[in-house]
Image (cartoon, rainbow, N blue to C red; front, side, top):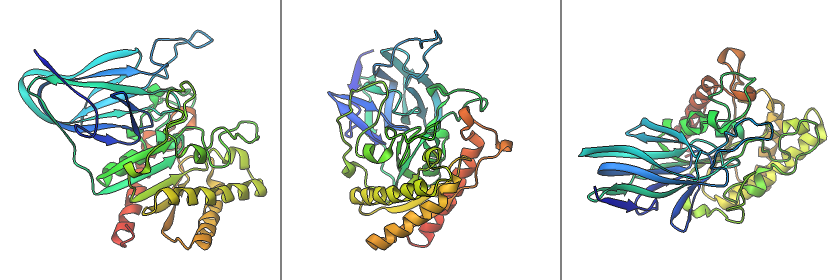
Length: 363
């Protein structure tokens, strides 16, 4: 059968999250980035390529390295392919038959950008196939967060299980599910271990490497690849109506009960809010905290930061939500991260909170 090749650009597909075109290849970088389109075709497949991590390898102790980029393909909301870039390139078949199939297809990167990327080199179909972008949603939400937003360990079997991209699934995290509940387009800007004043630290010393604010304008921070480290995100490509910030769990490993450090966190939070506003002039802000057990003591400092920000700028388009933390009854994902049950409960709570904002005319 003669084949027809489509590029994953905005003329053929809707772009989801922060994606990047590089010489005709659509790179999916941050969590839940992807593409969505309507198709009429007898056959459909994707030609994929991976970054430097996309090949079988082993860690220093001889165990398999499993932090390849993970992806899932949905056809009319049904999952049909679940895989990972364990090769430098591969072709993935979505469907193949003798009759024309009309469907909406969504290709989602499940894992986060700090570990690995994947690229869609071609969308391949039969010669008579037609592709068109899925329609834009009325509401657009950006979620700025850490591992909780990425869906770190959500498919892990216990708290003792260590991290792998193969147990990470952004579609099972509160952010993606909230956007789906609200029929909203979304953008996830999230990095595991990152914070506002300090990234995760196990010795109480400040970790200045893993900070969201300096990377907010970038496409991603990646531990293993320097492919796109100098590329910046064009904020005009996604004009947010609402921005949800969930940062502080990692900062808490540095601030602890130290009042000076907590106030430093609040001060840096104010600066970050000003930066977010400069890039997103029309968005309403929702500041959240509390899904994991760590970091809850910083919620009062988020309240302080919000008050100071409004006092200094006059901008009062801001609300706060304190989540009810995870419980042992709900279970835990890898490294004590939220389970699927916790993520679902929190997505429902955030959905209800945003619906109230809409009803009140704030959105």
